Image (cartoon, rainbow, N blue to C red; front, side):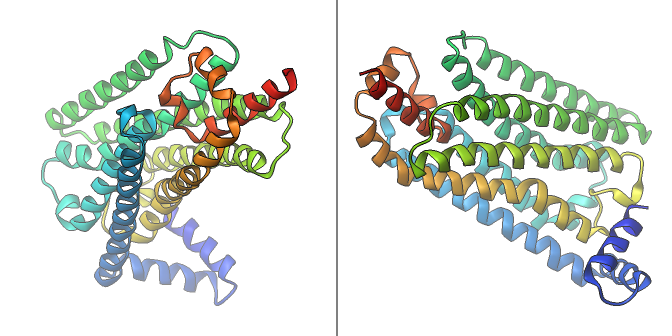
Length: 328
């Protein structure tokens, strides 16, 4: 049982009391309305804070570079606002959400933020794929259509599952929906591993001379590792919940499991991404001054302003500048 396993782990790592005491403590919190209210309110506040931070970042970027329109970076922040804001509302009204009579509507409300999270963070995969392909002088015209088609197919299949859940009272629809989200999470992790890994090792082959360059290279590796790990955890937990009721996240009486899960797979990566983007805003003016003729070379390479606003592109600008200086 999932609760038993979690309780055993808590008992061992705490180093206090017995395993039975830890399990009893876990079960007591799961059954306490006071703890449920406190934990879900904490999740609501955490998501609301991340949503506000993302909104502030979006406004700052728009005020600094309004001429670029809706770049991928701005879209990333906007989707972060929507995803985290929706999660905050759902956890704020958790009692009403978990007690909705329509199973299909409940599934839609609980699954939609996860799908939007998938779309938001696969934007980073698209970022890195575009940069990698252009650095290799490969065509990128099919990347964005592929991103839109993949997301469209995912949402279409999910809508069909919700419709089946509304028509059929059988619990198999819930299991299918969870297994589908697990598969989607697996491929998202695979995308981060492939394109994040490729970009990291490609950039690593360039000479890293300054502290700023090394820092940005480390951020590429960190974001890749964190996002890949988060989607792998999501894949495992969601698949497990399809077969084990004690691992189910879409219930009120598993507040600790919900807190640990959502902190690991959504709040922490969102916080890290916003920190990286904030540091990027502080670094961009210095890069713009130091890159010099590299911006002309970038325009010759037909890099769009969309890619120009990614954190990874700061590294690309600096590395191209270094290569240009060596060539001169």
